[in-house]
Image (cartoon, one colour):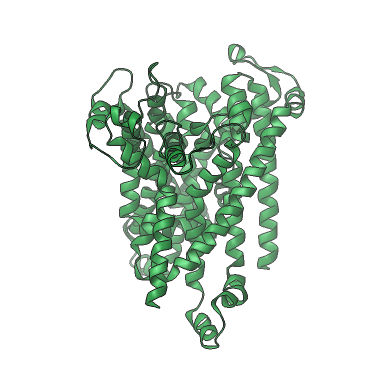
Length: 288
Length: 275
């Protein structure tokens, strides 16, 4: 009986395990091989072992640290902005959404558009001759900032990312807000508690776990950003918008420094792994 | 209360217009003639025309939108069906027998949080070696990995929601495991299967990084193909045409998403909260 169950379990698990081994296990081996060797696209099949050289190259590359700093800053700022805006919109619009469910569909449109496509759309919207935004700046204010110039490009990509993904935070907060028992809200309302106080004292504390989840997810997504920045400005003027993902991509395909790109990817993986373990420890501690 | 609702409508409209502004502006531009685009960048169309769409949909050798769309459809279908197939039995064995909870599940779910670029380079090398570069099948396989975590989570939720008594009753009737899985559990999971498929299709369609790296000509998906229209000829970008391309490329996920928005939002929230 038990042995039949064991073999049944093995059969049920095997397709996924095989799939994971083939498509991820093998590449992991490859990254270790190439991360520790010197390779170019010309010598792809004969990597020569070079120890920690690639890692040293990466660590000594100012552009790597600049990209890491960009991603960190970008992730923190966009996650914070999205959560603040998403929370405000969710709480304020909750009564409207309850009566007219379709309004949610309108607000999640940005999330269903490919980030790459959104980046291209911003290219049109911000274009100095064809774009409506500079147009309205000029006709209403007689002046328009250069949105993609070195001085403003960071703010521009932050705003673009924030506007596209605030709906995600909004959705999470809306769900959390609607799960707060109505009796609690009503009791506070009967007590005559002002809406603001009610929100701060009763509703917000109940939503704190959701705030952490939303911040974490949005930070991760912001940190690994590629698509929308790449299609909007690429690496940016003077590399101003080179995120970690863009740095690795460019090192690999543009400059053909395979070992170095792989070493950077391994470092990125270690950082992500550390962060995930830490976050799960924290969640685990809170739960217990 | 009535008065308050009025201000909420105003806020809703402002938020909707601001976050959807690029989409609105692109839609407007797509219906302007080339002459009008260069003369009138406002949101007002003087003489609406379908000219840009006609240009896009007229096959040209260099930029063939049908080819890109077909590539996106096939890769996204592979990328959304395959995870369902491999994740369904695992979801059941995990929920009902507790197998794979300790290692496999956290491993797969955490994949979601890793930067995709980490896998992109070794996968590129592997694909180059086995001839999967620039193929729809190869791209579809990668999209399947991208979709696997959420598929597993959604299916595990669905299996957990099936009353145990139903499965036990089938067992009593003498149903063996394959019969139980495919005749009892699978039909009961149908809503979740559909949601998982739709969600995976949209994610796969919208994916860009792997499309950019793994394809060059034969399997270029429409997210990457659309950016080609921005780099055309020496005369600068034809904004009307580019806008029409973006509308066409964004339409399939948008329609699916708007029709199924309840399922989509539900699974987004479920995926976030359980992870």
